[in-house]
Length: 395
Ligand SMILES: *[C@@H]1O[C@H](CO)[C@@H](O)[C@H](O)[C@H]1NC(C)=O
Ligand SMILES: *[C@@H]1O[C@H](CO)[C@@H](O)[C@H](O)[C@H]1NC(C)=O
Ligand SMILES: *[C@@H]1O[C@H](CO)[C@@H](O)[C@H](O)[C@H]1NC(C)=O
Ligand SMILES: *[C@@H]1O[C@H](CO)[C@@H](O)[C@H](O)[C@H]1NC(C)=O
Ligand SMILES: *[C@@H]1O[C@H](CO)[C@@H](O)[C@H](O)[C@H]1NC(C)=O
Ligand SMILES: *[C@@H]1O[C@H](CO)[C@@H](O)[C@H](O)[C@H]1NC(C)=O
Image 1: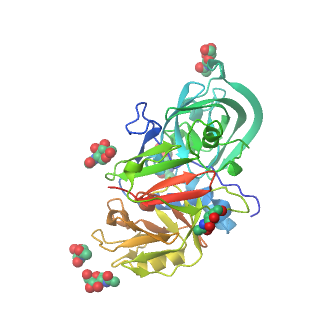
Image 2: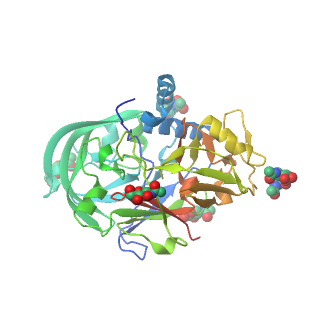
Image 3: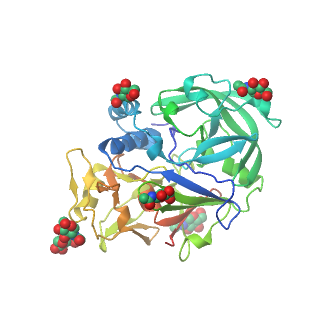
């Protein structure tokens, strides 16, 4: 496909923002994710479909696969998706508070407009233009496609406050129509993209880029710390314009983000290899999209098979899901930029049924790396240097 349209689709990367930061850094936001209690077949299928659609220009080479993923996803919306979509939280725009997902995989900010009168909008917080003294209408129509739906509306401008950081004149989408059943089931009202400007569908500067341009933050990066305490909740912090040095050990190792079709659009890195119990699996020329919205790691069928060959006692069940012994002691490490990052054994499985945290999905040489890796590192995303830094998390 020529036109890169990273689908904004429901965003997995949700951060809950407490009004009082719990962190030593005033610009840190405490974040929380409701994770699935069980790794069911449906959950894996949902993730696979969702990410195939979210990153369809990278992943979906096969239109039939895409069509069936779309169909399955639209039928699976009964799953309480928000229970496993990720972190969510609050921010304000024009002094009106919204619940949102902070999504590494998209680059637009939108909220439902008061002018959207359909059910999915009415059950959510809607933006009332007349309640904001700082609102400026722009009125450019936009449409953002999702795997199982779409949102359409017009653009406007207003001031954003998030984690104590205020920016003025943020261009955002006022959604007037939400197409598809998906939105009615979500706890969040809108989406807050944390990707690169080049991927903005409404052709706006992203909220974080604006923070940088307006010097509302000191540095052009944000840091993410994820902590998995148990299978009912993930907590962590998002630090805007700063790094929380209490959250990691040693130095951050920086990696250059890869362009896609000549532009920086997503948080993509080269991955050198994976080692298991010290043995390199010999993967070559692999890349990965990093997305905190995803609990798992998705690889091509071939790569997932290679990986599990080295995990003692793993097997592929009849549902096409890899399982790993719950008491596995295998030591897995991801090698990125020449540095090995160990994965905690608890991250080799997900949920209580000990399905593997690495599953087949997507395709080609592009992996999708989520919390099963990101929970083991402090990660720093720099929008000016185009780098991601990792350091082992301090536990
Ligand atoms: C989804 O929920 C609706 C209403 O609760 C129900 O009628 C329908 O059968 C469910 N669909 C599936 C696929 O479970
Ligand atoms: C929007 O705000 C105006 C001014 O306070 C109010 O009259 C109107 O009812 C509000 N609209 C909705 C849908 O709440
Ligand atoms: C799991 O973690 C969440 C959030 O940190 C907490 O509210 C909950 O009580 C914990 N549950 C158990 C069983 O420890
Ligand atoms: C990353 O990019 C910088 C600047 O473009 C360059 O100096 C550096 O060598 C690159 N690092 C790697 C590992 O490619
Ligand atoms: C797998 O487990 C068995 C039994 O615990 C052990 O004998 C064997 O060495 C293990 N293999 C690897 C590759 O770790
Ligand atoms: C894990 O449990 C199985 C079944 O109880 C046992 O056979 C195996 O030796 C255990 N492996 C490890 C590494 O403890």
